[in-house]
Length: 354
Image 1 (cartoon, rainbow, N blue to C red):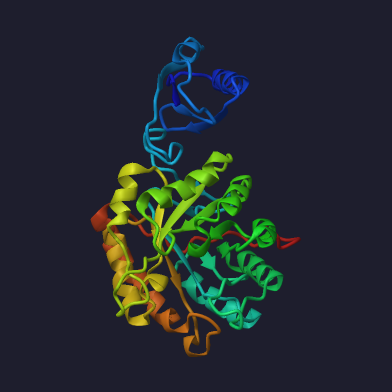
Image 2 (spheres, one colour; image 1 turned 90 degrees about the horizontal axis):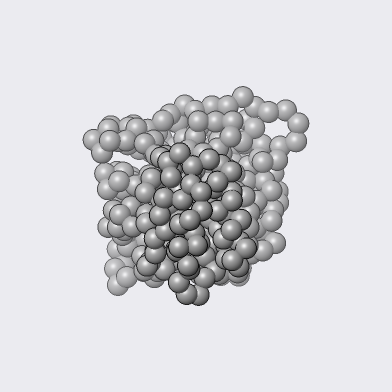
């Protein structure tokens, strides 16, 4: 169910409706929009008494939401969700394209700083780097853990880049939430429902990568798990799915971008690095993603990919990243977008925690 408030409804009236919903034994999810606030209702097994709610002050109408992904649906919120970050103009969603760049794994402090300096100089707003790596082989490099998080916090202080990194379990989730700006849930964990629910209890943006064989509805239901716990700052990321094709690592499904945008208000990014697994395919697919309407790009960049401890073949060089940014800047206006570049914030003093 969805309670649509009147445009002139006061914050007190919205709060009163939320409290009434809670008293009925349900959960209220207020989602402010540009014109009015909508309040999603979850926890109900059957029909909620509409008349009881429609009589409350400030309520315009009560409607039934038929989709399983209620809070992620445009039925609940027509306006696109924009995730913003305090202290900077960087955002994910809206008119500007969000560019997230960095190595697959943080290997050393010098390596991370060199790449961060390069992507910042080219205009990236966000830095990605793996601290905890869920690898297919138990003998492969698993990441530096807390040391990597501290390095990325220093990068945020030095270059003003917002930090995006993956949590792979409950223990790493708590640490990532403490040090990073965006918590990433990887493709292998897209249907780790206990982890999604725990991420939903955070008050920090969560980026969910599409599972290796996830349908559109399963993808949106993963977002619903996070949102059902009260965290509405969810970002989706298409990173390719497994098919019979063997000329790329995965098959990039760009058709999911307009499909998601038709059904959901959540922003969606594209990761052409994991989708293709090939350096020579990353740039063409990044261009195609922006042309398809993606809200941004998540790309792997490494200054010495031939020596990378993980995903070297799909990592582009800093010079290629600079060229990609120039190309995306030209494509963006064609689809009514902009590419913000050179966003900076002053380095803070004190502890280097998020």
